[in-house]
Length: 513
Image (cartoon, rainbow, N blue to C red; front, top):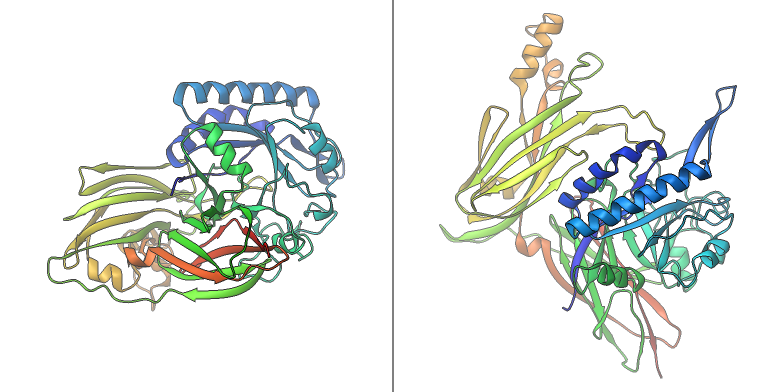
């Protein structure tokens, strides 16, 4: 393969009130992403005397001032750090064509015309793209209008984000978070565009207005020839893209040497569509879609690892930290810092942070240990587009160690030792119940209770997810498709056992004969 994968959050919104946070956001993304894109959000809430509020475009003079500040800062950071940065902004217009994030290879002035066709004409001939997002809302009310779509300006679309899945109406991934914008429909969905013959690649990204690249709301991947702005831009405009809903899932597809995103014709009766997946947990199934409809499914069978005494296995597992006291009764317990070390007698192959805050760090110590610090939270959002739920933090660890060895975790003054066989057998919890008992005793005087709800419900916990050996998260597969005289689109979707999902951009194939 001539390409390497690079990931980023391609939908990170910076509001006018957040302009002073930009340096911090870039710092964070330099640690957790391969490149940086920013969708400046030139809108504000307006409140009427009755207390009713709604959104409008912001003051043009302030917008120009802040945009110049953003572009200068990103250019400086790119020059100083070698960190690829693509400036952009969110465009909504009248809502009749759907929302799009406009990105520039080289910064240009912001334009906010009423309709999508005007937006396309404004930037025609420039290195700019407009990525539609949360497509599946109602047409005319911020959902995608495929009648006005321009493939040259919008080469890719955001199939999943903070809003949920815009793949189609009937899917296991809901689109219910922003109930004021829903419900979703088929007419504006990604599947609808593919059925209409649109050439559009696929990404996921957060629609994050608060923490860049937050894992649980999706990120985008590109397949580029090298790490440079030119190569990443070429990957985006050529639709060599993929997206995933949670932790990293690299997904590659090709047919007759043509990579994902390609359009080609062939005189072959049958074409092999090859798939390579590098996931973060067990791949459960690989699905093939023809013109947006499910065509075939391959199930990846589970099997227990076989190894003789002392023989090593390579495996991944996730550790998650959080939960804890009810903040209604213990308002001081809104966050907890988890500091610790994970060690193995084998070697640490890799670590991926699973974060929803800025406060997540790790460092490998030699080749046998990882030290870490992260912060779990129970929060209540103060902005209509921000998160308002419990936030756990954690890591996906990839280790190579003897099957009959153990893993040691020391965190917050406690020490745990787990056998690798136990980790591979299934998930389990470690509960900080003694702490919770002291907390409840101090608040209520309760010493005994007929069941453990009072302290278990208020206990911090860590969860160890079931681990899987490498041949279950590194999967190669293939499908055979039959080209037709009329062009068909084929895309692959990968679903892990835990429900995390990845999509690859389609490949469009037709028969020459």
